[in-house]
Length: 351
Image 1 (cartoon, rainbow, N blue to C red):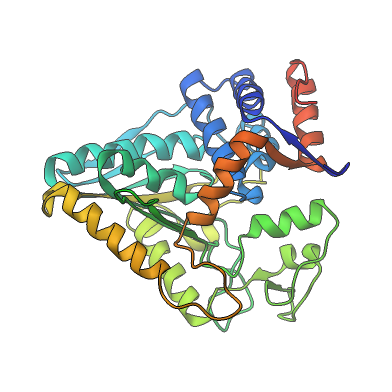
Image 2 (cartoon, rainbow, N blue to C red):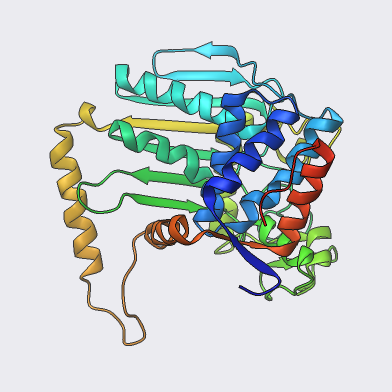
């Protein structure tokens, strides 16, 4: 590896990350969830949502903008619905607990849809959607976020990047896992470009005056762009309604950035679990999904394409390889992890 990137074994990273959060007062089981969710992002190649987030999460905890432990409060509890208050805790453990509730409800009534408010940045949406797979369920997860994206035609941010994910189980094939922001690119990728002193492609974002830019600093001060123009803006609107509005919480510009360490973010998430058994024989569904996957992959290809991939397939292949080889981490991320270890008084064991 180059001096700017180093491969580190997953087990080393998991232990180190978990201890960092435990030192900050996070209970062991919740520290495990945070570490696991961040590592899953890096394993999938989503560097912007992986261990590069450790420092900002810890700053939020130390400054009092997030509570170290989830104290989930039930606001609404229906057979297949629910609204919960995460008490301004970190997003990943709060989201994990609420997705578990959604899965349990779906076991009883076939399908569930629940929301949680007063949470924080929860990492990748796919991490929670995929929780349903082990229960032979389809999972959906979505979240609103700090306003960084203008509605189509606007130049002042109103929406967050408002990502969503859907995970669908298969039989012998890999599950279908679609995970995407409603912006052209996740804002975290622009943040990583700034950390690495790199430019960004045209079309990712605009400056405050509405002009295009390749400067990540100008982009972070301006607005990211919705994917597919009005279509991305429309989906961001729907996710805002299904999270902040439906949960009875704040939405749009009222949400506080994760980087504003002293103030709770007040992010909202939503989760759906669909129990396959409520619609017919599970095995038949999964075999039919396999047939669909194989049909898609056998579609005649254009001359510049070697293989057609299903959503989540590239990420799963990358994960399997990196579990063997280690996760390539940028020097800037390793330096941040080292500083956090020094601040917590734990040995730096990653190199």
